[in-house]
Amino acid sequence: MGMAAGGSHGVNSDINVTPFVDICLVLLIIFMVVTPMLQEGVPINLPEASNTQKTEDDEENAIVVRMNAPRSVYIQKKQVPREQYLAEMTEVHDRMPEKPVLIKADKLLAYGDVRKLMIDTNEAGFETISLVTEKPPGQEE
Image 1 (cartoon, rainbow, N blue to C red):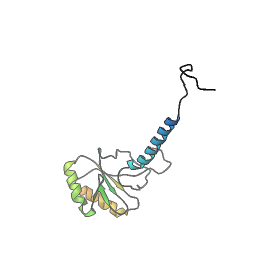
Image 2: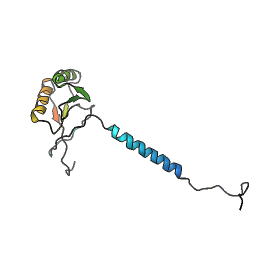
Image 3: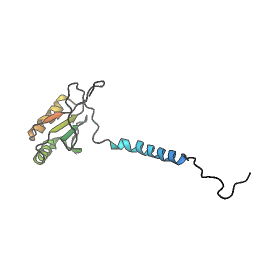
């Protein structure tokens, strides 16, 4: 009942899965921690609309303006005081006049606040202005 000396026994071909499971668990924890940090921008509760047209809403294809419930305005993720919005958008128009503007406004905002934002955007020189909405739950894309 002793150990065999020398090379009388062959190579042990059993797979040790413990290190593999350890690595998988570490990766899982890393992804669980990092994934919530990947969300970009300001959280906005978009209104729902059934008749919508899908467009690209990233910063490369359009100028994205966000307005959340406390009436904070963001131009391409940069917060802008509401009273300086027209001047900032005029400056943006001078740099990128051909890009359309997408307005993401919170559904809790008053209609007049969103309308004023659209009027100011138009006064800055932009002609293509769209409101971003979500499809109601249960509707197909």
